[in-house]
Image (cartoon, rainbow, N blue to C red; front, side, top):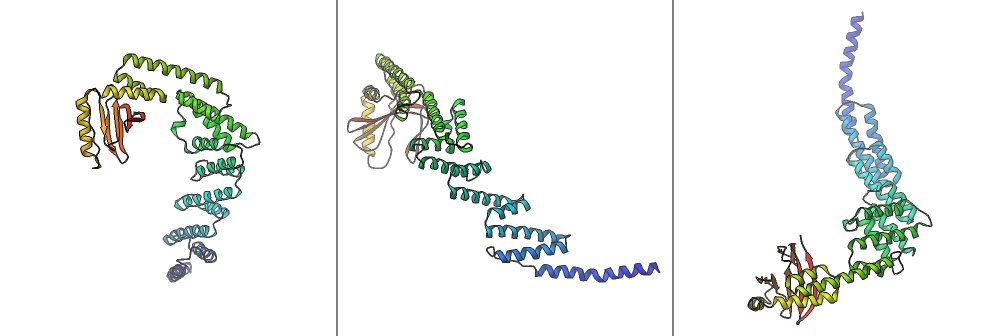
Length: 379
């Protein structure tokens, strides 16, 4: 009797199984596909039908494929609704994978838009707590600085410094450990703290960082720049004293160059000074020394004039003093003098010449007058 019952049950399974598979495949083919991404109602209905299929048939390849479709539908639904809660719900359901990365980017954008709509310091600070290194972090920091600026709490110059220190992150402004520490303190102050006293603290910190940078440069121009920006600053007395000392150093360096009265001495002097009055004197002495090689200069100018108007750049080395004449116009001459201890390598680029290596001085003469002098360092 038991044997007959077992046979009957097996027979029933054999008969029913094909009908069960047929039902699964029939449901599979009836499931909604190509659902419009912008139709919230159709997306919700499609999700319900695909989830019902997975509940009925949790095992097998079709179930795996169905779950992938469900994930795509949920992401399409999030895009269609496009709110913070729906993206957060999607990420709780699917925290990993390509769609999760996309959802996080969209979510960050929505949080940023929310902060931008409010447009307050607190709103941007809250955003930066969530996304300190996000794609919109720089925009949030810049927007915060604009809020400070528009309120009149900080000047345009200070706003520019805040952008350079805290957004661009240029290496030029973090040359020493103490400057780097000050900038990090400023970041913390601006982007995490709040309160009525924050503005004065920011301004003090900005001045201190600026002073440290100028102190590191340690040139007359740097101290003049500090005094111009902060005429009543905390370091005015020190800046004036250092400026006086630097001018005295330049005076002594010029006397040394004059005693030597050599081309190399004048070239070296120009490379190390920014004083316009001395630069002009030194440039005149450099040109006077250089044109002693009359034959080489004459040959250079002949080559220059022969190619004038052709668009070519003529480069002629004067053997004794490493001078070059470059074509421009008949009224303009550009002279380049290299440091005698620094081999010079030049290449052409779209702007003219690029100094790949070497140090030296460039003098521009127009209509017989020196109009520009600058030094270069390409190594």
